[in-house]
Image (cartoon, rainbow, N blue to C red; front, side, top):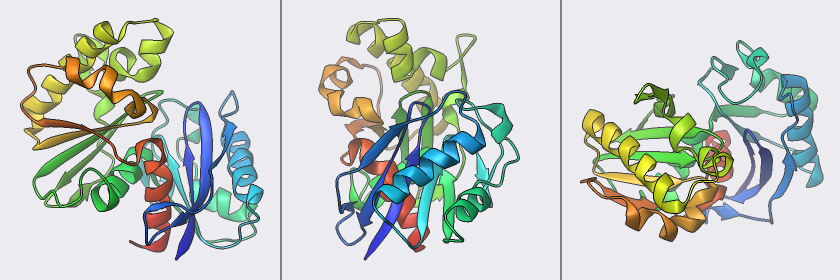
Length: 246
């Protein structure tokens, strides 16, 4: 079965039909830049551009970088604040001619995909998926069940919002070496581990493609550290799974 998934990020919006039997993209994904300012109207237009690129008609799953309840945004850390209180599900559905739309937090979507098809498959303890990108997204699982909307990227670390120090964007913006950035990520992981004592951290986001450059540099974390297997496609797959009711 194929369902469409689209992943809304602070820098890019990407999507594709997903083969839910294999847990992989059925076609090469299409990506467009997130408009700035990232207002609801501008972003929804780009989301629909991605969907319409494939001539897709049918259910659509979409991720959003913030807390989502009943298809509505409750926070908006890395997009325009006008998203707060916006019925994302309704906006996208209306623009797509009434197509069924499911919306969930972006890291939750990535985590669901990794738990079902990727690095978290078969894990029954506490698993924390962290997506290191424009910000830091988190998905927490215990006994295989998701605790939604955890937003652990906004924990305070040394007087700073953690994602402003340890996200992939922070590394790029400050032109940090992998070694310097790994020390920041290490401090963050040690803090999260102290709070949750997970069995494993799954490290996702686009930077997971380069996990070999920084994960071996991280010390002092007792939990297993593993890169996401679905890498930066995990959000698309998880969004499609949510739309299919998986």
